[in-house]
Length: 427
Ligand code: IMP
Image (cartoon, rainbow, N blue to C red; front, side):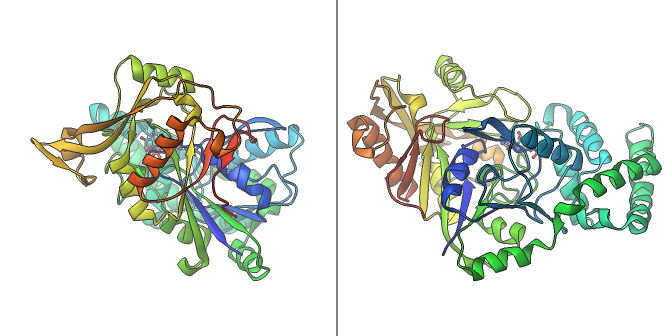
């Protein structure tokens, strides 16, 4: 039985939450493997509408085990709030487990995320200011505090004092703000630890056991490939790898275990935060997409930048992830357009290029070269069979398949769980 990685193929917000919620019907375990509460996975199902920041989108099924893997950075206050909200809506969270190796987001991470962004001024990255970047920085600097540390009172206090001595020097001497109190943070995090203790486990054993039982395990990515710190639009990226390869590291399984990699692409492009986006539409068409699709950040509420589908970026994403299939989400948003455009090349210094440049200064100079396709100007939200889609919509999907070099398995035509067209089975 397979491990299926569900990966954001663009700049995040592709609709991974909905896809995971859908696939979780047939899965036994879902492991979230990267990012933190910078993510906001929207799920609409019979329980209501939810924006999950940390808990895997499979939590709504009574049969799925949900794991927050070691690769996620966890703000315990946000997690506890999310658990409480789900419980209040009647969703059971006793099948949720948290890796004891996941790093914690501490109050100084949130503070530093804001201070560093303010210091960057005109060059700000547009982070979500949730402390995710500073927490991953500390993980690499070996200054992190992990969920497992919450379970040992004395060790937690000792570790916190050591790290906070260092952080307070940065806060006071570099940023000129007041130092943080170790005792206050300790008593707060000790309480969080007591609350989260039943969930904290060595989760790699659980994943291995599920695989030995030949169960279906989904790896739930956060953000998108073009925000990857290595392959994204660096430095305008996030701080952990959203790629399929990141799934192995962040869930604790070997690469040979992954059998399918589903890239989730929106039928057009969006981006939130700073950094280049070659197909961005700073005109009424972009505004129309934003308003029709309500493209505002699930975590920050910021308006998302909208534009046509960028097949150059998409093909790059397929290459660095090794997608075996694709999900095209929000096709219905294009229902009203008379003509659609797909970016099939970039014009750079008078020449056409067909690759995604590594350098943001170069990428900023790239002008999209478009291919135009006819729109279908018909409602698709009620359609459940691929053959029932208007011919122009099928032509659009077929062209995307050719351009991104991977077959389309799934097409989403609305936010509800059942508003989906399974073109080819995934599980
Ligand atoms: P950070 O991950 O909060 O440090 O933000 C770095 C960049 O990634 C910013 O441009 C954010 O807008 C973007 N980003 C982070 N998480 C998400 C997400 O879940 N969806 C879309 N963009 C995101």
